[in-house]
Amino acid sequence: MRIVTSIVLLALLGCVRGSFLDRYKMAVKSGFKKIPEAAQIEQLLGEADHFISYSGPNVPQEWNTEVYFGGRYEFTMQVEVEVSYDFSAITKVKGEPKFYLSEVSRVRHYPNGTWGNDYDGNNERHFGRAESRKIVDAKGDFSAIGIKLKQGPAVRGIPGIVPRSLEKEANAHEVS
Image 1 (tube, rainbow, N blue to C red):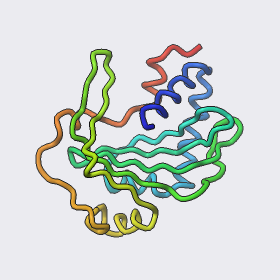
Image 2: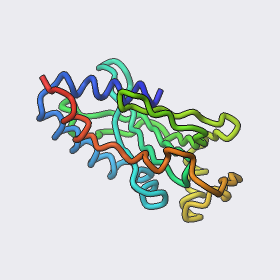
Image 3: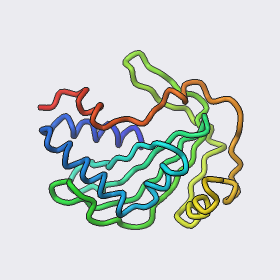
């Protein structure tokens, strides 16, 4: 799902003129006002990717915040949103955000410059807003909701995963 949303977004970027990128940045900026959890994740866990998946006019749009931390964890928050007609603002948050914590067991780097993760499915957790608030109140301590994070050396390749810059990704693709 996560890979698909990024690919769909990049495909969309490849089909529109540069002004879309400016409007998209405005939409993401407006999202921080409507989705406080997005900023809280960065404050607690470090720089994150924030992006809006868009698969067409009849498919729900989803806000995504994703961050790697602790040398082995991927933390994602998703919530359905409505975006303005010109894609310049989040106009409505629909429903409650969902949170996903996954332990990365391996990072695969492919010859074409892309990468993908393998996960330890035994350490995958999903939870809602109430649990996320407990983590925030505990200043990022996941044990507040019964999750004991592993300590120790980072999974090889995790330190190399840095938040993607939408602008860099868009500029790397031919815009027609």
